[in-house]
Image (tube, rainbow, N blue to C red; front, side, top):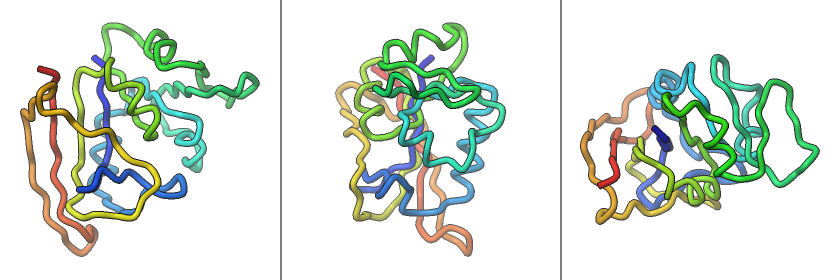
Length: 160
């Protein structure tokens, strides 16, 4: 299965200046729990936004830079090649950024969204989830607290 995973604001904002514009520790824990021991597909800018490669995951990076080769990563030049290097019988996760989400949407089986209940000024956005193509099958509300400045909901969509 190809699974897209993202934290997305009410206005579909993903981030600004190659960084998230919110901090939700429980969402980071959920992301880690879902993606650990799996292939994760991302664009070069998303990869470079990490202080170091994420542990216990196989990184597949999409870039047009032919000489780009970070140690221990698989580098390809298209979403099709990224998906092709992932094991067919395992879940693989699309983790961003905005351009990669748009390219990957036609290949995606499941979308895991953390919907942050706020709007943000952003320069990167998640594609609109078309309700004619996707069905919401799970929703779990979470409320702001001393570690989370915003209410948020975990949403799982499957392709109809």
